[in-house]
Length: 321
Image: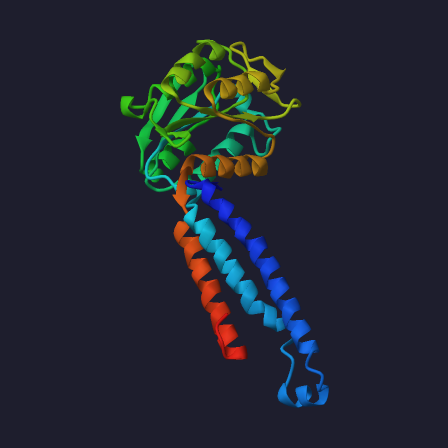
């Protein structure tokens, strides 16, 4: 929490001074009562001692004073509010290594399932694009608000040979319209790329050589490393020979891409973890931080405390403190 006029908070020093004054007043009343030597008569005059509740109205008045002083300092807080518009491009690796079954039922199927979850998380007015890549890059859907179209294209993705990770990054970044490049909403851009891959580039541009274009455009790339080190895949060559290949994810490449572009890197070895990651990213790109003034809230709280203290004092003691 911050304050537009923080110097006014020095007024809070009045609270301990008021407490000391109240304590001294109570001691004075006790001494005065002790001078009333006819205790039998005093017992007949006073029906019942108010006990500790006599301090409650005063405490409420002091709380009201504190709240009103804070209100005068114009408190402000940063809160997360839904964004009105933004674009997210889902960039999905559909290379042969993504058919590995170390993530059930396969890396690709788990990614597609979790991508559907992501579509449920982002607001309806968000635009979502879809890019897939193997040895070649395919823009399956330009950014659109039509979720059904994106879901249909998502289901049609299947495993193919090759991994053009760098080319996929370029194609995804270039989907951003000029007006959304470098436009910031708070600390969050209006365009982001969500890259799902095992990261092992095999053809086309070097992924680390093309991230500058994303950086210049102000486009963060969130990367999700799919699979485990134990991942394997069987590939049949042109001669009909089937061989088994180890396909561990290239975590370092994906981590560097995220760090260089201002995004975040995640590891998702299971379907459940992947869905959790999607929800987390959805909350990050779906909301923006906005500073809001809380003056009215503190002023209202102070008024409530003051009214309550006065009411209790009038009810219990027939006077307003």
